[in-house]
Amino acid sequence: MTTIKLPGLIDPHVHVRDLNQSHKEDWDSCTASALAGGITCVMAMPNTQPPITNLESLKMQQEAARARARCDYGIFLGAGVENIETAHTLASQTSGLKMYLDQTFGPLRLDNLDSLVAHAERWDKNRPLLCHAEGRTVAAAILVAHLANRSVHICHVSRKDEIELIAAAKMKGIQVTCEVCPHHLFLTLEGCRLPAGYIEVRPRLATQEDVDALWANLEAIDCFATDHAPHTRQEKESDSPPPGYPELETALPLWLTAIHENRLTLDDIVKRMCNQPQKIFGVPTQADTWIEIDTDLEWTVRGETMFSRAKWTPFEGWKMKGKVTAVYLREELVYDGEKVLAPLGTGRNINEETL
Image (cartoon, rainbow, N blue to C red; front, side):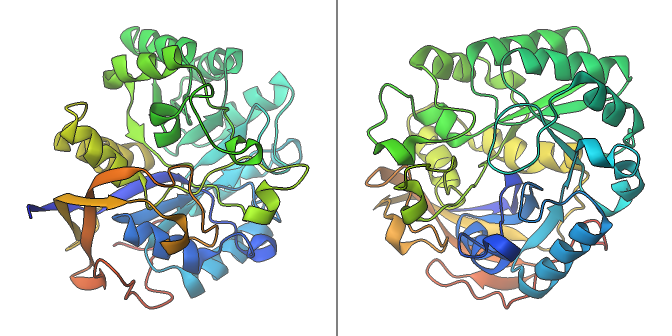
């Protein structure tokens, strides 16, 4: 057994659900799942029910998190046509503004360029601006942000043309950062053996050429994010399966397995799941917080044993090498390798207080 110690990890892209979607996941089960995956801070997306677009809906999620979160957290605000004049007034209470430019799960989507420009111009330049953008809308998001003289973060990059465009923009000194998710680095549409409904995810799984391009442009990737998006088995097996995968507990083991395959290093993981997310999203340093990992522990992924309410995983049956054995949050043992020990409400809002 080889045990190593790493700082607590940050996941900047998590769908916590809760409130009207608690049957899928809530702050309790989601943050328990995060701790089991070595993640001590999650950043919650706003395409919830109700969507987080105004002070009332933001307070509802803040109260739910305050009562149930077991790890630290931030909450993103959603951009819509109806909150162009008001969204920026909530910047200090959030971890950033999320703009949906392409099809996704939930009601939020900006279909016209005017709304994109208006939000980019109004949103506080010291707070993150994030985009769900695919293909040509990646170029649109980068250009609009550049003209507004501000930075933009592109979520879950999945394709060759996207990562090459982002890399080129970075070379020109344009203020753009991006993230990549495990499923877009380890799964392909043609190679995936998941049943039809379970394959559904946005952005969709791509080709081997796209996957290879992401690995080839690793230096252009600022963050690793899970895009943890749980749905029940019944929903995924329905006639209209919603898109998304639960991934909080498998992301780090996938990265650790990639280290054994000489595809990544520990420094790559710390950089993209701690240092860079902390810098991009303004996450305060989590004092006396760390995780312990057995890098040689071999195990098989089983969805039914996970803390997420989904109880399934796109990596079912995969052989992993490396697993979290302990997590400490502010010197307190909150996960012992089998049980989550953090009480409900242990987590702190990174936008409300010093950690």
